[in-house]
Image (cartoon, rainbow, N blue to C red; front, side, top):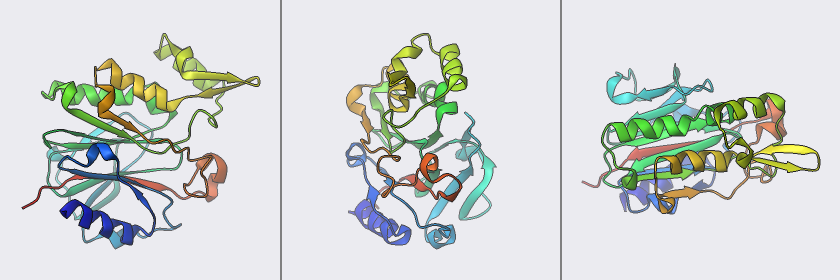
Length: 245
């Protein structure tokens, strides 16, 4: 009940629709993917919550918030990193996207939550693989890890050039599995590339939820940087541990 109350409050504050993945419904985590936020959205409007957003730099750096002293209730865009991890209750950790892949992670017993921003650079560098390794190294069994992969630009629309293909080839021997060759063009499948990294750690397929929405195809509902370019806004993804009193 508390999660649904908080979800409704977030929806009102964000002034957009939210996607609440089924895989998170029975957990201690409240996590969601938003649709388009209004341009010039004022993050101070979220000050009734304790929220952290990193300064995203297309890295594979993970901010472990249990080891960082936050200076304010709303900690926005100061610390660099593209992955966040915390075990704190009622601290919502978020990322912004406009075509890149947003990923929310928790475990079945509610010990922690994580969020990742991974575009082609992070995906090719194996960012999700690195993040999952950290969870497994601290003792979380792959069978207990739950992953939600949010709306992003899909392989139908994500044409890439030689630079991306070469880097993919250097990092993945099976690189052709993540490419689609169509009409003398080459498209990258970010969904498949990240799904593969989860399977490499033996995460059960039923523990992985994937949005079917393509941000480019559905650009009336989502911001797509590839389409809107400098005029693009963004959507957000948030997750936090919520335990009923």
